[in-house]
Length: 79
Image (cartoon, rainbow, N blue to C red):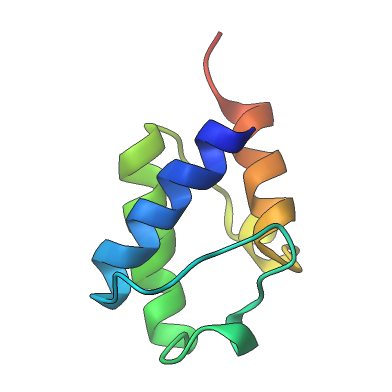
């Protein structure tokens, strides 16, 4: 799981062009400057590319924080 969070942190750095961002399981959009609805779409596309997975819109809509996102990624990773 820590590998997933570390990789997510890298994606956040790339998408938001801010190397000072440090995400944790409890991080939400309100915690990251510039994380609005448009950036959310960009972020999710980049996460899908980084992990080689696809999310449904209902999966994305139900996420409450980065921890739930990390759990979803772990569940969807190919064995």
